[in-house]
Length: 284
Ligand code: HMG
Ligand code: MG
Image 1: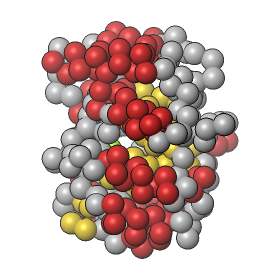
Image 2: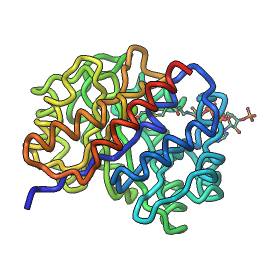
Image 3: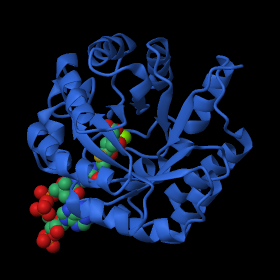
Image 4: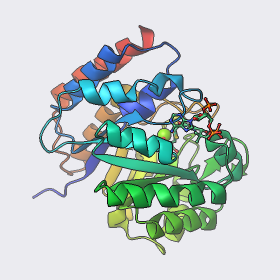
């Protein structure tokens, strides 16, 4: 039987958060509902961050209330602080994520806190989420390059991964936020991170700015990573990472993995429809 690799769909969150046009809630709900039939186990579709910082995600509660939840799919949300967690609980998110960074410049720009201030803020969020029965995922941004600070040391990434592990994150997603990672740098970073957390608890989150996301996925596969974040239609970017293009496209990762003999459990016809819908949302 083919080795299963999970694609964690993040388009409705990481993809849409960067779009300039105020996308109507109904369109977001329609995208999630379509993707719910594709075979994903997890879809990130909400972000309970400050609406002043990311206006596009202000209707996350309405999105979670409006979708038709498919059995066996976990609908995930970002929660930067306790206020975000309260909103996620009220909206009945199935799981939440805290998001730190391996570089000071990005941490400050993204959450208005240093790396350590951010981590300290996440501890009670993770504790309260787990007490409420919600799994908590961790993200580390800028695992190879930072738009403000340049190259990031693998040891800095490993340190943040260890902190997220210690606060109980069930998985840590490693973000090449601005898609500048070269395969050799990704491999060195993974070497350091694997000293802290086994591959079974890691995910790769590659943006495709330089067209190297699939190569970087191959590097992570060789290291045993079996979960990759992607956005249908290659939606997205990050509002606090200038120059960040979209996440690697789900349909491209799916085709790549299947061509390499891995099973993804995803229906390519549904993904193609999702990619088309995502592209139409970009232009309005
Ligand atoms: P701050 O301004 O330092 O926080 O922002 P604050 O506590 O002073 O709050 C400011 C205002 O926001 C207050 O309102 C709060 O109530 C409100 P006011 O009193 O002025 O009316 N507020 C909130 N409202 C709703 N929900 C909340 C919330 N928190 C505060 N949860 C903060 C700090 C962390 C809130 C802010 O910086 C923020 O929201 N940042 C999020 C930025 C973001 O969403 N970035 C994109 C996601 S990360 C990403 O894309 C990377 C990733 O994909 C991986 C990768 O690619 O690397 C995950
Ligand atoms: Mg991202």
